[in-house]
Image (cartoon, rainbow, N blue to C red; front, top):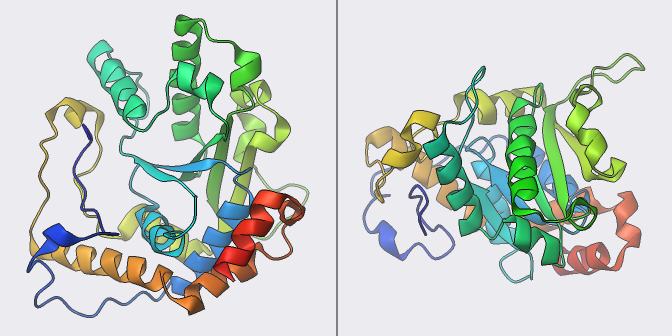
Length: 274
């Protein structure tokens, strides 16, 4: 695929000796991650999950293991946006190429059965705002019909958990574009604030940052420094953890009680995980 390289950790044949000498990963956040992952699945609207950027790589890894024997589809969308500027023409072309690589084009959206559910950590929602704008312009340019596509797009924000009150600030209430979609198409799942900050701001990642000016410069190779090797050990451990009965049941427990459990697709997934 014409995307920035990241190891396939579900069938990691190409790792070789990369993990030799790495320390045992400390996945101190595993319980919170499993709970959040279950709620993301439950609130996905039966959509194929697309993880935007790098922040939720650990959720992608955990679910890659947990959902290995199901019909669920997971993708990564490895790009980001810069605050205060739009996309130049070459960047726009590259962004569309990367979306097409994972089957997200105006024509495909109009004709697919399941929705596409974009997932990312969210503070003010700027990434989702720019991503929606990119898609909106593309759909308009291709003259595909919004009535069909609006039911195929979902945005799921993983937010930092706060005490709720009538005055709680919710990013989607301040984003005008969300009114173009059904109310159920833009939802949130909260995550412990320290875990949220770790994933979004501090966790070592396996890939270079997805800066706009580097979109066209990516080569199909990965970093091999010591910090990356340790991050790789953590990611591999999460895939393996997701395969365990214990973690699958943790994810299922988070699904239990969700309103969407009345729907056949989620009941089936719940049984598979349980």
